[in-house]
Image 1 (cartoon, one colour):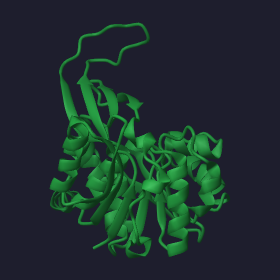
Image 2 (image 1 turned 120 degrees about the vertical axis):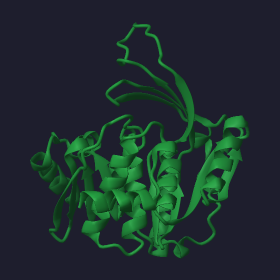
Image 3 (image 1 turned 90 degrees about the horizontal axis):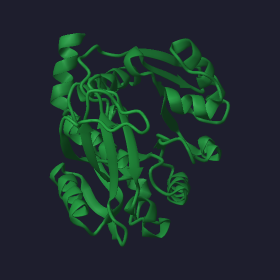
Length: 304
């Protein structure tokens, strides 16, 4: 079992379903609104926990109804919440609009996620973790502090620099495993990424920046793994009926971390993560769509 520390965001996702995403200035009729636990940090923590990892969550919540609800839901997942702190800001909120094809648009109001500071990081011993997961929905100074502490403790860091705007490329050389989607790979490499061929070219550019291991997720095409030793693995996706793509990437990352750092072979871990993400997009919501290990194993047994 992998012992995983996730330092990152926790949001309440307010999700409204629509037939088609609105264009600027357009008012449309919603088909229903739901409130779902989300945030990239919490999503990845939930995915890792449901795939068998022992997970600790660190970050900031507001002392409000949303904050209390998110805290309780993480505890219900069996996630260690001892490193979560309450801040004077409101809990982070994501306003999500999802269309009939499963595509979405998201507006983040970070609140407590951005008011959370490095000095509030209540993790006394980094060396007890097998891996640390980071994203880019909290202050960059916190991620920088985590990278420093992880390096001193000799613990690998998996980084998902999303949203990519505001990410410090200088951190790339301090990351053991970088996981990005097509848009993020394009932004960081300066090269177009559409399909496996262009992803490889962009991947080589990113490896030159000092990243030791890299995964580029390519949506319905699958994922590409590359590393500094020259290993390249193309993993196809699993065709499913897409309902909602929210948290698909977070599910992939959390599931992969639990599998790979829990001792599963690399190729099998990539297949496992792809299957988990496929199941996630076939259901609505963020954390509510993330499958448990038994579901992923059954899905793989049917597909392979």
